[in-house]
Amino acid sequence: MNITFHSFAAFATGTALAARMPERSGANPASRSERSPGLLRDLPWLAAGLVGNVLLHGAMDLSPHSYPIPWRLDILGGIMLIAVVMARVQPRYRLVFAAVFLGELLPDLVDQGPGLLNQLLGLHLPEREYFGFHSLRHAVAAALGHEVLLSVLSHLVVLAGCALLLVGARRRIPSLFRRR
Image (tube, rainbow, N blue to C red):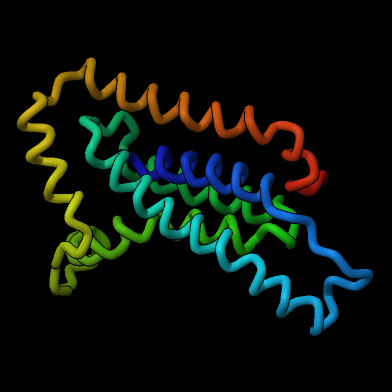
């Protein structure tokens, strides 16, 4: 799938995770004694965001899909979405959003980043695939046929899943993000 779709899915899962995180206690959450226990308490949420979104990336890539957004616009759109979310999210939830965005983008950065850099910059970095679902997607596409209807359906399923996550977290969304 396009980076924009991966980034939007990470935004939705990050919002859903952050909405379910327990509030930090203590009068001064910036004090050193409060930061460490809070970070340790947040580790399961960070791990769930990172690992869950690597798996979600795989599921999205295995679904039959085309690339409806030109790659330059796609990269720009994905980066802009990540930048806006990271700039607007409350500091308490910044690590969770960083984890989900990293989880969604890591497979493409690792598997396809060297090839893209080779193509754009004329480098000769070794290209290797560490995440099996990138090569598996070609077998899935061949088995199912890569029809436009299946691609549209896959994109709609991703958008519907994101919408469900955001609707489920709607009461907490105002407290997760800073107002202007």
